[in-house]
Amino acid sequence: MSTPKKFQTQKTAFYVLLTYILFQLSSFILLIPPIREFFLQFISKDGVNAGITLAAWWSSVTAAIAFVVCIILMSKNKNFWNVFNGEKASIPVSIGWGIMGFFLVYLGQTIGAYIELALGIEFGSENTETIMLVTEIAPIMIITTVLFGPILEELVFRRVVFGSIIQTQNFWVAGIVSSIIFAAIHIDFTHIILYTISGFVFAFLYYKTKRILTSIISHMMLNGFVTFIQLNADKIQQISDQLNK
Image 1 (cartoon, rainbow, N blue to C red):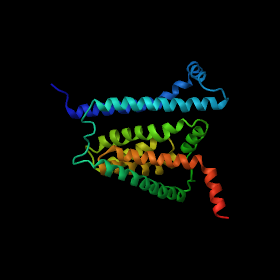
Image 2: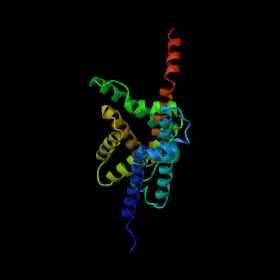
Image 3: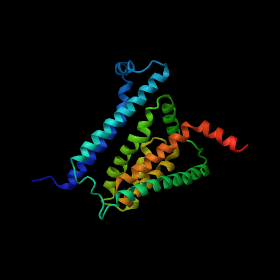
Image 4: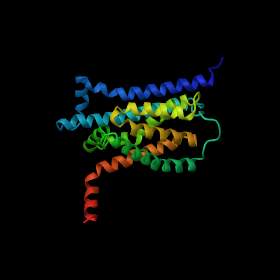
């Protein structure tokens, strides 16, 4: 007897989720002194920065490996993407929604930021600041932040989590639950509203076009935009001061 298609899809989703979890936990290996020292010998010795550079390289390499593993897992299951009923949006339309989605997410985050401000929560995310600090020291981190990170998160939180829930629940339940899980995984509970809003918009984009490509594009554009602004904050401020003179 052949394995039911739905079970095969759930099995693939579980393995994709497991791959992501292992990727997230893999950095703890660097806490083991012998292993840490082994890899540090390949990093330019620069005091504290050597450890940060190693962490950035480790994140980028393991993210790339996790991405490849996920692609292999998904390629073995042709039914993995059969989540929604109806015809998928065309590639050009999906790309268009992906670009438009970036502005929707940015608008949502702006509204969320003002809500947080009204609640007494200051602007600025510690999670983002930490990533930017690492990126300034080791630019290789951009690969994780702008490329592999968004792709893996969309595969997990939109296809696996949202895609699994929506098969038995409506969009609102699936969108809200998956968005809260997405926000929680960033371990920045002070700004959980911002992450939840972002996750919900990404879920909407995936649901709207029935293509994960759409939310991936928006997510990559958002992370790329934030990274560019953060890394060039001083230059942007100088230009702004000159224009205001």
